Length: 102
Image 1 (tube, helix red, strand yellow):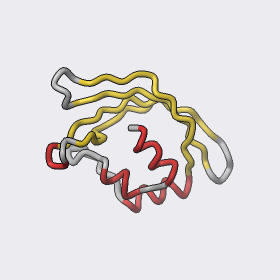
Image 2 (cartoon, helix red, strand yellow):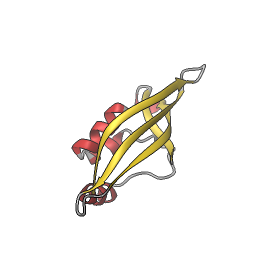
Image 3 (spheres, one colour):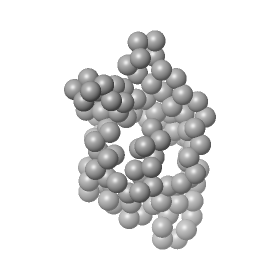
Image 4 (cartoon, one colour):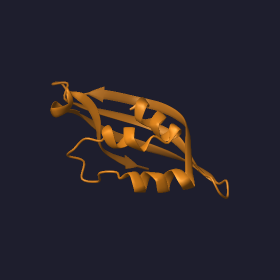
């Protein structure tokens, strides 16, 4: 999860796409991420809690971050609860499955 946040900070669309679970219904695209990167910066990650399922195949992370508009300068804090799942087709690596932002 922290590596994905770093990828947003570093504007690494390829890494974000690569670490999204294939069963995520909203697969990110390079064009969509580049559009996001052109408008926003993210910073100030704070992880509040995390857990793993008993079988070790799913995980949850709750965190807060700041998103700032590049033009105009306004910023807002968001809290997200994200679900991660191991990808058996990619060596069991953790990948982003879904999230709810509040």
